[in-house]
Image (tube, rainbow, N blue to C red):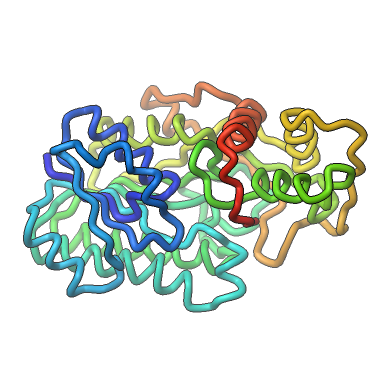
Length: 320
């Protein structure tokens, strides 16, 4: 079918494009390149089943023209601000790049009769809870603007599904790492160690512990859920049963960079920044019951991501 990927030149979106093209679909990649990169999709330049369009998915006029031209069967909506710290600094970023892009996409789907939406949501919608996070957990009180925009997006998706006959797949995932990443703790550590290979500054006390999911595992989960879950609004956690401490991530990065005797310096406190959830655990029983499980542990995902970034040398962006 004809498929639109908003945010298709981004970290996750470009990997989704790779997989959908391999399955034989016609893919239109729309991206404003604020976080996405042409380099992520350059290898599809000569593929007759691929189109790249630079546009802002929050702009109704631009997005409507794309919907009118290609008549999509499904939209993979991945356009969003994925840098939580940037959202805290610039207050309009999450509203415009996450919530408004969702609403504009849904408006176009309604107008042009597109009935399938796959949405990249986040564990950030849950807020800070001291129990395993289940899809049915609630009420939800996110503590970051990013999480709030994702949760509001889920609400609009649910309403459009009820009113417009749309079927949606909402996948909530944790920290995702791997090739083509644009920001995050692994890039932070690599960039800091390049500047000073003798000392590494670590935000918080290093005890923060979260699940890290390898990007290829996430893409498999997204496409698996799209095919297997058949409700009107399908909401599932995707992740790994294990988790990684920030101090462990630092150790892995140091090992992969081949450094010795690096001194770890901590800023202190139980979290890296305001809006950071220092630790959480997922309930994955729902997606496991469908038949999907991640093939890499959290620590394995971190090591693969660190290795890829170091080998690729593209570590210019610093994030959370």
